[in-house]
Image (cartoon, rainbow, N blue to C red; front, side, top):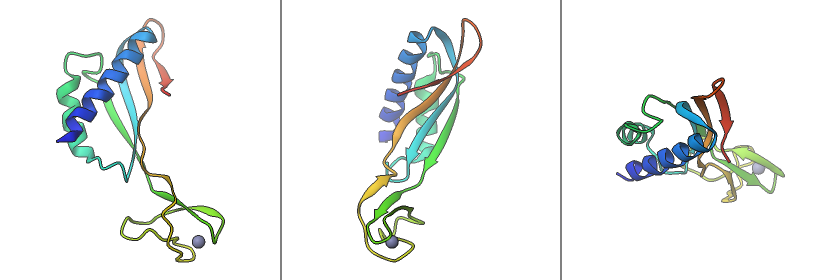
Length: 125
Ligand SMILES: [Zn+2]
């Protein structure tokens, strides 16, 4: 289950960010996961609960932001969202296109920290 090692690396990154920002615990972690990232959210949540124990993320809410696949269509000169992954073609004009602009994301969007001062939502980049 590769989600377990992904969860471990996410928890590690978030823990480091939390410490640097002076937080003592993470209450919410928001992840952006593209539909092409090959991640099963249920498996990731399971892995997250395992690896987050005894870290500042132990009771954190894991919010998953689903990122749809977007491709560039040269005929329409537009970035379009694919309705599914069966066909990589523009839903507007039908032109096949493999120019992926979004959908491979696997990143921490933000953390909500508790610590000294107010809970703060921290963008993570
Ligand atoms: Zn098109």
